Image (cartoon, rainbow, N blue to C red; front, side):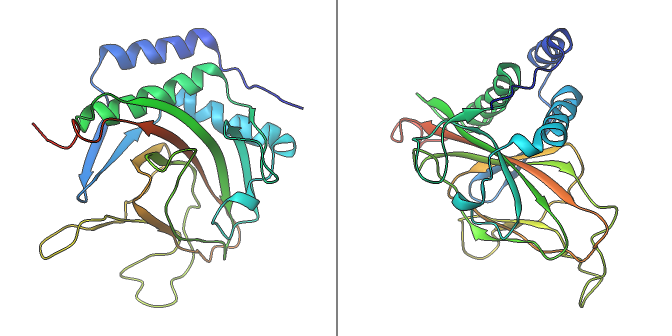
Length: 239
């Protein structure tokens, strides 16, 4: 059964119009490649959480094609080829898909990418409990070039006691590891995550999510992969 969650269309149209008129609310972090943090509009945030919470039992299990050591991984959208792990489906409304496209389009324009085509490949939700983790990995879709992302939908009030060094907490942390190297390079990024943050970065940037120890609460994130076909030659210059 396919269930498409429809947000309140008039409210959502106002969100898109607001984004068009005002400057995008974002922060860029440079690790040799750009990681950009966006703020998710309330309508999108509530809509995606409501979709997950009300339709979880109907959503396809995504474990077979993901790297995470996380039992609760479900798919909201998949447009890749049918295989023994996943079949094409969409539980996400066109309005929310348009919002994702608007964010990826902004990222590419900000990075002066030229002559590109975008195609959202997959969207899924990870809900982690104590002990779950996501090992170091990269992403891909139908293409090896594209943008991945992490949206923070729910966080525990605390991640539980650290095994050592409580002055440097890493429980439940997302760590993004840039591909640049050498002295004086800022290569790693462990953001102080807040609910409603949305981090966008290229497929080939390695990242990891560490386990946490709070057994009473869960950590919920959403991932959206967008294939990008672009002109590598004309996009190489920063000018």
